[in-house]
Length: 456
Image (cartoon, rainbow, N blue to C red):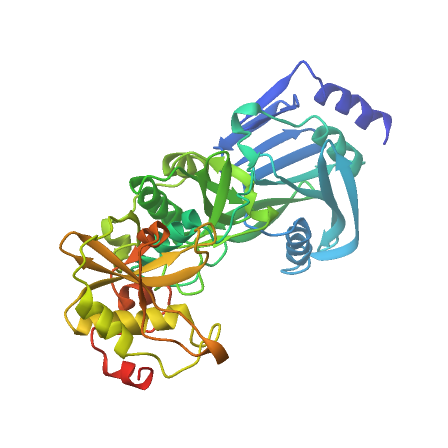
């Protein structure tokens, strides 16, 4: 770096002259400095004799810094521009890994040099893109300015939530069923955001100059989905927050001091508005307490139509039933004793879930007011299914998976008085259970003719 540049940088880099931008500050005192934008996107431009500095900040779209540098390199290799030489390297500035591209380019015999620097900040979930052109020493001048950048506390929403340890328990079962009881009106899989970099160039007084810009676009659903699901969960009594990181937006629900993450991009968006997910990456990000904060941070107008999500069915519900203590159970006991299942008990092929749905269909077809009950991992009966029948003075519980030797079912079911059978997650029917649990549901109607192939 020559003496002229050193004197210029000493003028520019002055800790007493902190320039404030949305979410960060930097020490720079170039005369012609402008700032445009807000927290989600903006640009700072500065010009002085023999020095031009640009700094873009934008919401991260999930693109690695090297991709941005590739794009710049390609832009300066067409439309008459020729890259004479280029080099890339990395630099650690504060807590950020900065990727840097130096290019010497030309146009019709005029030559210029430009340095680009790109880095991602997990604190604000923003990508920063800086560029500099100077008479000499672009790289050193640029790094000197970047070292003065400091992100401000008001935009530091980055948090690491404590992942919920329990899985497959009653709490997670009810949450899953709520998410599956709704669907997206226009089911599709989410796509990521996109960026477009463009450049213009001029030759003025035999000096080649270039001017870069960048445009961002996000699919509308990326913000509509978390807003709609947030209100659904809150109205159901949950405490949700919205997380954003590197081009993705999702939900987390609080349970005590722990959190359960929910992806809003389920495999079948026509069957559910979300699915529970696990892993450290789902519990780190910028946290918003409501959709209004999300909209403000991303500089968008967020208005969710009432019919953006559509209810498929009722969610399941946790119940604690009163047992019918009447002694007049002879007809029900006779029916259960006289019938059984043809299939042998086999886990995941014909087990308690299948037997209970067949029993429910049979009893419902005979006129009984029957329901399905499910226990989760934390239930005294474990992960299990059985049937309850509503009587005049309460309910009667029926165990449908009583198995004898050689895994043969003993009978259609046995009446149980154990209190554990009178609490759990209730489903109205086999179809109701199937809608919420399609991989295990049998989609049986009351008195369904198909049950004959499973009963004797």
